[in-house]
Amino acid sequence: LTADRMVLVDNGQANEFAGTLSDYTDMILGRQGGNGPKSGSGGGNRKDERRASAERRRQNQQIKLDLAAAEKRIATLTQKLRALDQAMFAPDEADAGLRGKTMGELMQMRGSVQGDLDKAEEQWLALGEQWEAVMG
Image 1: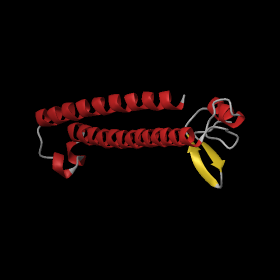
Image 2: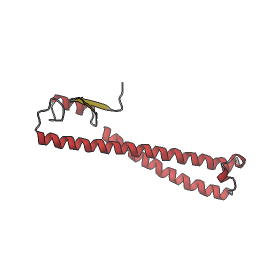
Image 3: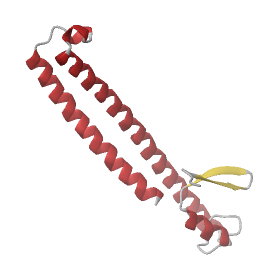
């Protein structure tokens, strides 16, 4: 079995757990003095740990949002490429906004969109690497 995320249920609340399975085990067994129910850490330290944990969750959420936006941008640019290809190879079936364009104009537009797509894919890959680093 695999899981995309873990949820920690503690004190009547369910929160996404940002660490690994090993982190969870250590926290529950009290090895790290973590913020789990069996922890014996002091109030100030626990508050700092909660603050740090909340910041990690916020950063993780932002990476997820950025990944989703990058995927949407890739889909949009891919659709534009398909429309340009359609206009180049079957002009009669092209979108209305592309029908009057010359082959040179279409090729220039396609090159621009392809460049944007390449940048979007690079961004998506970088975000994916960040996500993998965060999730372990």
